[in-house]
Length: 179
Image (cartoon, rainbow, N blue to C red):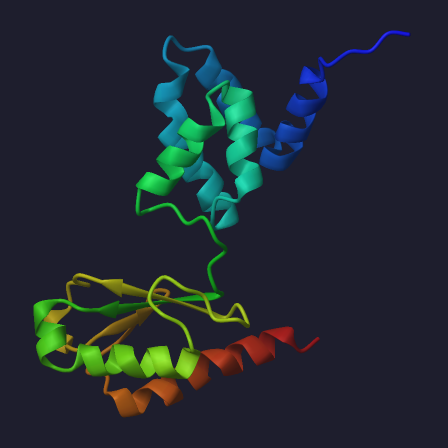
């Protein structure tokens, strides 16, 4: 009876299925260079751009295909603030907490968002609709306080306006889900 523990082909096939043809081909090109590890950040960016976040399965697949220790891949993904290791909501809310916005009440707007959504900064609502983030500055100081939902700027926002603003996006989700 012959037993083998060499399942490299199976592991590689699974990793390629998880990452898809385009990213797998990119990794193949990276492995042909003198320093394949130097391409890790770029590969992770592409995976996140396609999927919205980096799942544990993505990190494991990258480690397998690039032949980089899984701990190193996870360490890079966890170190950089840009990478998301959890799925984000349908809408990304960024509250400007820069000086101008803060002085004009951004802290009250943020607190109202936290209360309405039942989440803290960096979290996603249980319904998967909203992810809440704080930003140091959105570059719109003259419109303070500002919050940005995806690419839409909401200017001179008060805490009282938060439920109305959120409802606008919830209505959009409801309309999208109607067949």
